[in-house]
Length: 79
Image (cartoon, rainbow, N blue to C red; front, side, top):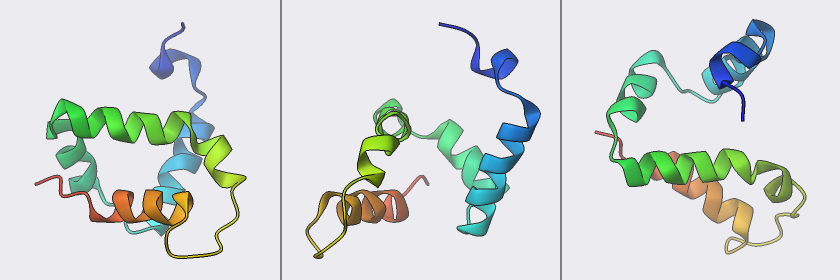
């Protein structure tokens, strides 16, 4: 496995940060994430790793996996 820092083009990092910024994630939120419990960091890493399969699931009700995933991401307290 390569290094995420050295193997990822800056344009890709910038594009990802642009999406997070558009969704209301700020610099302080990133600091909180780095200081979060390892379990929270692992859950977020899992979300990134499984994002491809999660985007293929259509959202049809409040109890679908993507809705639960979005709720988890938006409700996790990193403080």
